[in-house]
Length: 131
Ligand SMILES: [Fe+2]
Ligand SMILES: [Fe+2]
Image (cartoon, protein in one colour):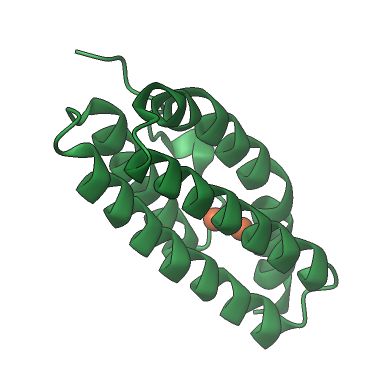
């Protein structure tokens, strides 16, 4: 069995409940995709994409609601990573399974931690000051 791509822990919390819930779900779906066999991988990737669209939309609604000062930057990064993930999903249809597995096991977990530590954390800290 492949090692987990990421593990949820309280140290990942940004203390906005819905964001922490989304991040735990993102990690669970990413782990499910990395552990899926080749036959199950397309559906697991689709589930991760569906979640990510909603996860990003919820953060963007919060940014708009509290007037987050760097929302353009944060929204732009969401759009960039969604495009990238959708491109990798088409690579899967093209049969580049090893390439897609490396993306899910290495690139996407590193991106998630960096994004959580910077843009999501800053957004949460700003929002918590506003309530
Ligand atoms: Fe997030
Ligand atoms: Fe984000």
